[in-house]
Length: 260
Image 1 (cartoon, rainbow, N blue to C red):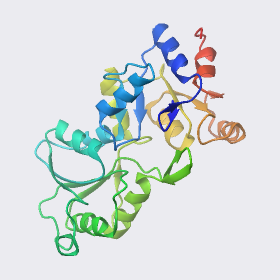
Image 2: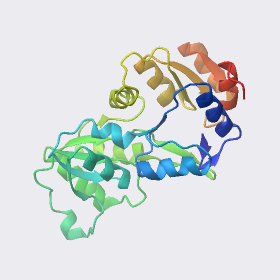
Image 3: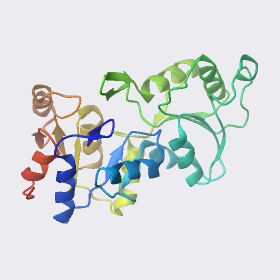
C-alpha cells in the first residue's frame, strides 16, 4: 500500500476500483504499534476510508487473551488498546519509569507478556520482560518480523525484540500476526466466514503474506513493489506454486478483470 505512509503509485486507485467492483478489501498488518484509529486515519488521508477494515497483529494477539488477565506490554499503544478491548488488564509497559532498582523486581501474577515493535526497548526492559516470563507468564509476540522497510533502509522489527526476550526468558513464544493462526482467526471474524478459498491475500513478503495465504486457504498475489524483486518472487512462485506475481496493486486489480 505504502512506504512510510507515502502511497506506492497506483495503490489507492487499485483499492478504490476493487471496492467499486464490489470486492471487500481489508488491511491485514503486522504493525502492532499504532492505534487502529490512527491507521484508519492514515488511510483516509490518502483517499481510502477504512473504518472497520484494519486488522493488526496486536488485535490478533488479543484473541489469545481472556477477560481479566494481567498483561505486561513490551510494545506500543496499539497493543495496550487491543488488550483493553478484550477487557484484559495492562499492568504496565516494560519501559515505564524504569531504573536499575525497579527493573530488578519480578512482576508477580502476570499472565502474559505481549511484545511488539517499539523504539524505547533497552536492557532494563529486557530484564523486566524476561523476568516475568521466567516467573511463568506466557510470552506472546505480535509478529516475528526481524526487520521492516523504511525510506532509508530496513530497520530492526518487533521480531528482533521478541527474539531477545525469548532468549533471555528461555521459552518459545506464541506468535500472533501473519502468517500465524491467531491472525487467521481475526480475519475470519472480520469477514464472518470460515471458508476463505475465494479470497486473495496480496503482499510483498512470501514468508509472512504468502505463508499466511496458505494457512488460511486463500489465493496469493506477490507484489514486487516492496521488499522482494520480481526475480526473487518468481523463484518463490516456482517453489511454492502460488497464483500471481505482479508489479503492484494496480496490476493485481487489472489481472482480476477490474477496470482501473
